[in-house]
Every structure is written in C-alpha cells, then in structure tokens.
Image (cartoon, rainbow, N blue to C red):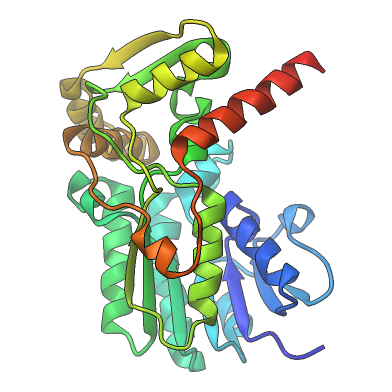
Length: 306
C-alpha cells in the first residue's frame, strides 16, 4: 500500500467522517489522526492508516504529518460538545490546537492545508469559536503552507436539528431572534464532496465560500416542517438582547454556549448572500434545504413507526 499523502484531522466527526468515506470510495489512501480512546469511532478499511495524536499535544503531531503532502482538517471542539463530549475546549483545540498543527505542518514540509472554517459573515460574531476560526485563517495565510479555506453557510443537519433547539421531531422549536433572515443552509455531504475535490485539484482557490442552492429563513423552515409533518410546531423566540447578553456573560464560563449564542445572533441580524456557485463550479449538484427537510421528516417518520 502506498504511503498516505493525505492526513485527515476530525475523521470521527460528521464532516470528517463524510470526507473519509469519499476518499476511501475513490481508492485514495489517507492517514486519519485519532485522539486517544477514539479508535472505535475511527474510519477503517483498506487504504486507511490510523495514527494516534491530539491537536493539544505538539509532540504527537510530528509523526502524524511526516510524509504528508496535504492536510484536511475539520476538527473542532464545538461539534464534539454538541455530541456530548466535555473534555475539549475551544481554546485548546480551535485556537492553540490549530497553532500546533500548522507549526508541525510547516516543519514537516506539508504543501497544502484545507481548513473547514465558517462563512465570512460570521466573523463579526465576536465569540470564542469564531475568533479562533479567524485566528487559524490568519496563521494559515502567514505560513508557508498553501491554504485552502472552506467557508460553508449553516449546516442543514446541525442548525435545523434538536442539537440547537430546533426540535421539530417533538413539535417544539426555538428560534434565535426574529427568524426572518434567510440562509443558504448546506448539506454536510456536499461540503465533504467539495473538500475532497479541492484537495485533489491541481490549483484550487485559497478561499471558497459556499451555500446551498436556495435560501430559507428559520421561520420559513418551521413552516416547511409543518407542511411536511402535517402538524403545527410550537415556536418560541429568544430575543436578540438575550443573545447579546449570553454571548458576553457566558464567554469565560461557557464558551461553547457563548459561541452558539453569538453565531445565532449574527445569523439573525443579516441574511447570507452566498449560494451554490462554488459547488457548481466543482461539478456538485447540491441538495436544496427543502429537500433536506422532506428527507429528514420522512426518515423520522420511518424511525418512529419502527
């Protein structure tokens, strides 16, 4: 088996796992950085090499990046917190951890670094998470690496899910703010496919902003779920002033909560203008958000009936 030329960080998460599946389906060997104790959730199969390491441990990264030409990283603390893990912090992973990884890549002569960031519109959210994303982007631009910064709009599977209070399966949804600003909610699979194609491209752009093919406001999303489910959904709204207070007061004690509040506030204050142009340029027919709503409701109905 040839030496893996790609290192994937975050392979046990939703986006990283989707990237791993696509690399394996293409027969592209890669190395997956797995935190100690996470091997059970790691991708396995022909062409996949697992290496134990942690972004918080610089020494463990030196062997992980050895012989690697391209790093793809989707790792972040906030997704793990939403999944119920409490041992990772934004400061240690999204800020210091990425500083460690970029330094190790430079020392090892890595050529390309694909980083899953956030849409530029969220840069003004002023939260621990968004500040860390911006810091990583700055470090990449200042490094010797050829950066490819991927900036997706809100993920369909996250921001229209119970994980953030959008609990449509149980008929109750929390909308942050007025819920009138439209966003081009994007599918995780579409972002994963885009990142794989960018990793394999000869000369990819340094910044790629992407969304789904159509925009929808949170209020419109509630109405769409009501139509599909055929039942009303109890909707409550978190006032913007409460989100501003939460973003500030919780910053030190609960940075994940503060970050979610700040990003929700930013998304409510202004709609995003990005659509699926970047995906279409890569040859990807992105899933519209209304199709996701149909599929999610149908899958829930099947599961509920089983």
